[in-house]
Length: 179
Image 1 (tube, rainbow, N blue to C red):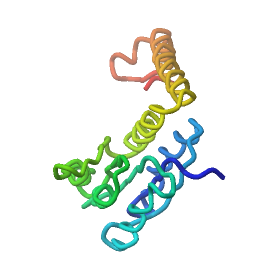
Image 2: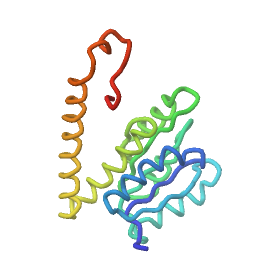
Image 3: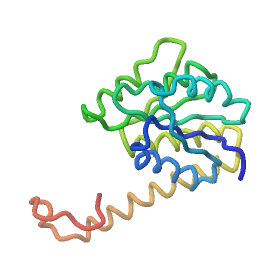
């Protein structure tokens, strides 16, 4: 197995269903990655050691998901100079607490923050690929194709919508395959 270019970390094993979506994106783009649980509060020494060793291990981007106090991304960013992307988890306050904890970093310790939950994990992975693509023509090409596929999916959804019965406009039925 190749050395990971991206490290996906989460504050709790319960975050795995969300963070798995980011791992799927990285796999789709062929980006070597690792996944592990680290806790800024329950294992702060491990987080600091992990963060300080990232560059030496060849990791180029970290995606950190955490809920509640959500200090994991910030704790990692405080101890490394590589990019850290924070994914707020849904939590007691519908993830708003996690979002605010992740996005409110002091000057000089940036954490790029994406949306809450699965869409955030997916966008974090795409952002990681975009960062890596700055030095990879192959990833640039894959990202361009990804944009084409996104556009194509919207076109297909519109075609299905136009073929659907009109009664869905009255709130009775939403056509299948339209989201």
